[in-house]
Amino acid sequence: MTDAPGGAASREDVPPQTGVTTGSLARRLGVSPTTLRSWDRRYGLGPATRTTGRHRRWTPGDVDMVLEMCRLTAEGLPPAEAAKAAKAQQAQQAHKTAKAAKAAKEHAGDGDRPARHRARSRDVTTPPAAVPASPYASRSGSGLPLGDVRQECRGLARAAVRMDALAVQERLVSAIRAHGLVVAWEEIMAPALQAVGRKWQSADERYVEVEHLLSWHVSATLRHVYAEAASFLRGTRSSPVLLACLPGEQHTLPLEALNAALAERGEPTLMLGSAVPGEALIAAVRRVGPGAVVLWSQSPSTVSMPLAQHIAATRWGIRGARTQSHVLISGPGWGRSRPPGLLRPRGLGEALDMLQALATRGPDDV
Image (cartoon, rainbow, N blue to C red; front, side, top):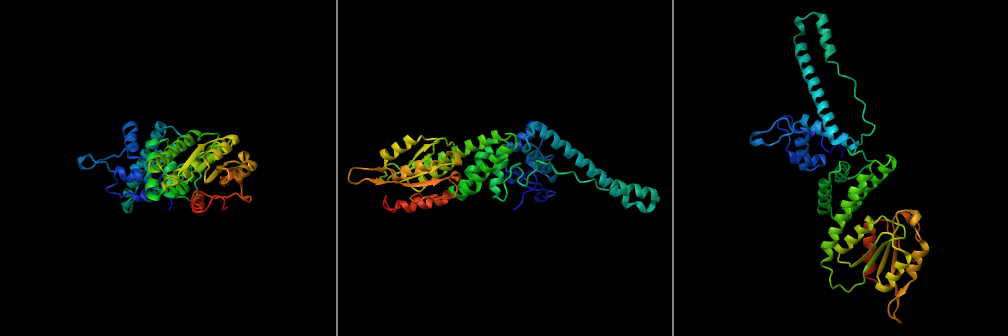
């Protein structure tokens, strides 16, 4: 599945006579209907005609104009300037189309005209040289290096680049409802977050605000999923899964996704969050007695194998029946190593499978 430049819709998707509704166009472009209406109200970037009952119908020309608006805002142009440029391009295109139609009409009667006039008509209809593509243009329509991803991921990225908070939230909720949390995280949220991170690192931090917006909404969505599921966990007697970032590690979103997914499966959790000091981690293990501990590291600079091994060797419980927690080291910071006594999941789905298998075994069965 491919996208037209600047959005999920292309000119060929739009019936030439009837056009499309605002809701249909919004879904194809990856924006909210409210955004399209706002662009019409603020910048005059709306359908040229309306059907009976004042219903909006977007013609192919209208869609081209909105596609250009999306492309320009994805490049970082302010919305007002992008709208002005998109309208100017549409007016220029309309002028060229009218001029070509007039020339074609004149050409139809060339049999009765001198040869020099026929040559002039042919010159008029010669197509202009192709306009070179913008160096910021992207197959995703968002300006982000997304690669081969789901259409929902492209829509989420476009909404984030436009700083359309409402559309970002709508797409996150829709993704979870349509595909479940694991697929939504692994194939929609995580690729979009990774693309934003790569972009701002290579674009003089132009996209830092986009990463903050997207991260906040992803976190809010994951915590809402957890809060809804956790309300049914009261009274459970099983040992919780303790989740924590290693000292100095600030990236919590992958752990938040695991925390929410475990709660959905009825597993109690204890989320400690970012940059947990080593002493606090060890104290929490002794105090709580978790069935498993998941240690997240995004970067090699935050990895501490001695700490992970120390936690794995920590015994807890009453005297005479002391036991240990299973320890999962997760995240790209750990590399490909899998030291003895530690488990190494490669993603959210694999971590869930490991933890589910561990829940059916004794604490000391590693």
